[in-house]
Length: 88
Image (cartoon, rainbow, N blue to C red; front, side, top):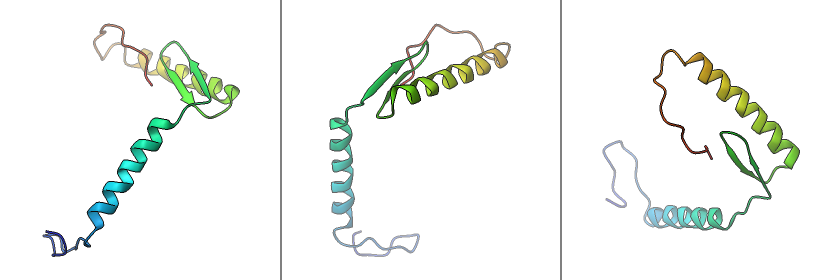
């Protein structure tokens, strides 16, 4: 209950829930209006970022190396499934 002690011994300040709700709403709105300056696609990933194209491409190359390494090291352990869409 608002303003009363909870089982863990903490209290919720009146209006605290409203503040958290507004903060989450603002976060969702700002996320929706964010537009990436750069979009780089690799074989398995789509990178949307505000970094420079060179930085995004370098990250894409690193992700592809990691993807290949994990795929090769787990090839005998995990069953092969159908190809998935790109990670985002």
